[in-house]
Structures are given as C-alpha cells and as structure tokens.
Image (cartoon, rainbow, N blue to C red; front, side):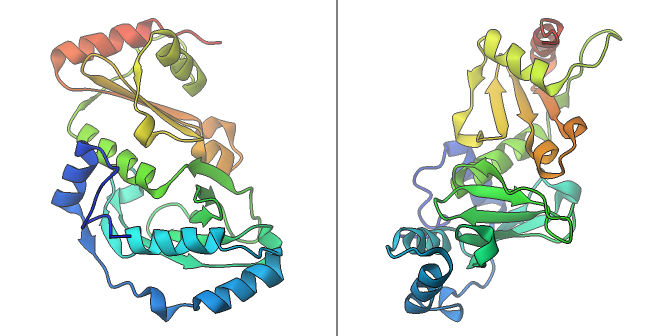
Length: 242
C-alpha cells in the first residue's frame, strides 16, 4: 500500500487539495517497532487472536498514514497533528488498540485505532472513560479536517432571534428532516456533516461521550456568502427541539 500523500485514492477532491496544500511528512519507520512475529505473539497471548487481520490493518495504516502531519482547524489551537499508528497492546483493553494520532496542545484525549480499523477517542489517565468509536477509517479524519479548513473562511451562522438555543440533537434532526445532503466521507459514529444551498452543518457528540458530559454535544453552521447565510438562517429557523 502506498502512502496517502503519494496515492490519495479514495479521498475526495477537497481532501486531496487540502493534503496537497497543507500536509507534510514527519519521519516514520515502522521497522523501529515490533516485528510481525512479535506482534503475532502479543495478539495471541493478550487477546487469543491467531489470524493476521488486526496485524494486516495495522501495517496498512502505517503504510498509508505513517508520518502524515498538518495543522488542523478541527483541533484546539489549530495544532499540528501527526499520524503515527503504533501498537499499544494491553490485555485490559479487551481488543487490539494502536495509537493513531499524536497531538499535545489541545484537550488531553487519545486517538486510537481499534483492531477493525475504527478510529476511536478516549480520555486516558487515572479516571479512564469509555473508548468511543468516532470514525470508520483514517480517511474520514482527513475528510473532516479538509472540511474544517474550508469552513474556516466561511461565516459562522447562529439561530435568528433570541429563542432558546438549539441543541445538537435538534439541529441533527432538522438536517435529516429538511433533506440536506449528507457528507458521508467526513461523518462517522459520533460526527455528522450535511450540505445545503451554500452552507454546511456539523453536529458532534464525540466529546460528550469521551468526557461523559452531555453539554458537550455541539453543532456548527457555516455559510459561504450572503445568500448562503440567508439559506442557513432559514434552515435554523425551521429547527425545533425534539
């Protein structure tokens, strides 16, 4: 498998442009970690796994993403994130979990890759929370970051008037009910994107689940110009609480 910067097949044109303009490579040498035989031994001893499915996914992730780095507007302080899939197998995890993204500026959450290739978040430390599946693949992380980068130059839109603030669940329901076009490539288990007439909607339950705080359910709407802003406000005006 070729690196995503050399062969971005499977990514949208938006994500390809984003990587071409903003991504770079950090040193990454998969051979510096455990060998295939060592990892097979760990998988067998810790999880009673005797096939190579999880190992193959790890090596594929290392080949496709290892060393990829860029500034991400989706993360706090627009920090630089680096894709570094390294095995971090522990019996207590219940399944193979590899580190996936390294970051050090924003909130202290870990980004892991599960044995089936899912990208998951967790709040590690003495009060470890649940492991939250967020995206189905690393490509979805890139697609999400490409959308955030594009929307950074758009106009944020909030509900018209001064009525009770809309919840993320209400905005998600409105997007589905009003027939906005879903952006599946950047969506996942706890993140959803839609596109309307020149505006975009993003709803996230990720950190509500990671930190087990319902008030962290969030939503954003951005408009690309005055007419799109009018359409976005009309969309929000049609959103009601469940």
